[in-house]
Each structure stands twice: as C-alpha cells, then as structure tokens.
Image (cartoon, rainbow, N blue to C red; front, top):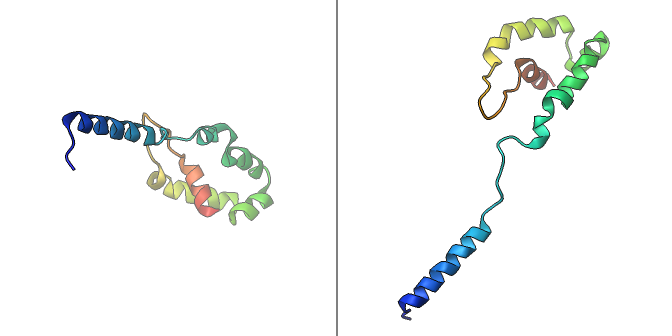
Length: 101
C-alpha cells in the first residue's frame, strides 16, 4: 500500500496528537501530604507526648529514653542526610524512631 506525502503527513500529525494526549499528568517530587510532616506528622505529635511518660515511651520504642538517647548519639552522624534545594531530609531522630518501630 503506497501513501502519498499528504497522507503520510496527516498520519504523522494524528500519531503526534495521540502521544500528547497519552502523556501522564505531572508527578511531584514531594507529595503534598508529606510536606505537612514537620508540623502534623506522627513523630512530631506523638514523640512530645511519649517523652512525658517513660512507660509509654518504653512500650512504643521497646527501650528507655536514656537508651534511645545513647543510641541516637552513637549513630546520629551515620544516619544524618543533607537537605537539598528540592526537599528537606528526614531528621536523624525521626529515622531512628522509624527504624525502631
């Protein structure tokens, strides 16, 4: 089947339009839900209450506050990350809490 140049041009235009329609919506580097983590995240809200109650702290992390602090001081420099222009890193204390949970 031979196509004329005009028919080939029309087919190319139609295929190009199909590609543009089929593109996925833009994805974001950091979802809006995670941007609230600094103020409304689980660590921010729960940790403040746990440090007031030693038994609840122990139930949650399976260690005393003193052990948590000693462990944190020992590994902080190894688990600390740098902020970038695009997003803030998860603080080392949050990282440790997630790991222990």
